[in-house]
Image (cartoon, rainbow, N blue to C red):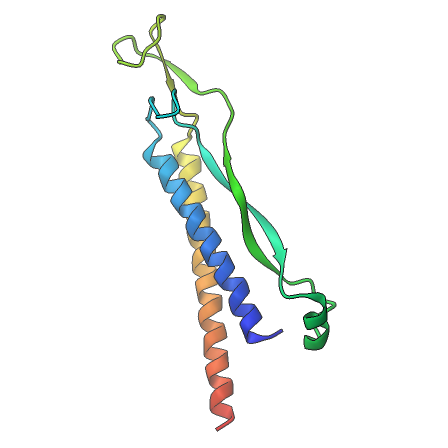
Length: 145
């Protein structure tokens, strides 16, 4: 596997995890938002990842990696939760309905925090992999001197 393919795979994962952390932080920031420009409570969002093959078949054959299925991380989209919002009785709230219930986002703060920790760890792992690949390339260049 070429050094550049390895760097490409790690950098695609870094970009994907950075977007995931941004979406998760937006979810956390809007955990109590009852009114949005679209109307109603904020809807939780989640990033969808998919595998994108690296290179092309001819180049993989030349590199000797045609038997290995290497993939980069691609963000397929951002899914908006369609589940029912939580309802809480609070007749004094300005967004309360006629029965005194307020619709709140269906966001579990602890779940979002666990997902944030997972995204942070994945980001750190890919940053380390990218750094190690760079160091190996530098060592290879030093050997050639």
